[in-house]
Image: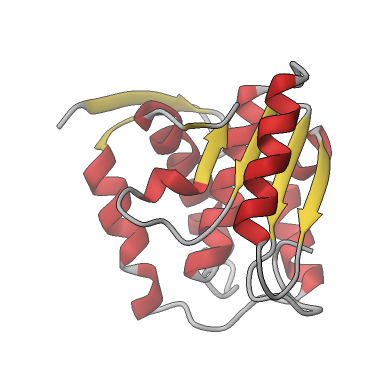
Length: 171
């Protein structure tokens, strides 16, 4: 496993050594202690602490009962063909958790994944220290995705909805 030494500015300037597997293991542990979905005001507040990464690009929000993954794949392909820098956030993953985060149709590199993990983790530590509930598994991954796409400089994000409904974090 490659260990990454990263400087993360969201939570202050610090250096940390972490492997891709370390990050993945910590994310996979979230369902054991974070089960309550956040409401839209709390999601907006958390995004503010991350520097509002969702405001850095246009979003195509894909929702519905069937075919979301196919629609996301088609849209991503069209955007790439048109030369528009795009990101894609889909779920679930089949083998590698990074399958959820595509930049230009390609799975995000490990270093970018770990960098986003550390950004979100640093905000989570501040968030929970003030008594707020830890983001759920899906919320944490969604926040990571927004950081990944902001850091990559995408212009358009193809965003597959989660479970849907008024309180879905992707809203």
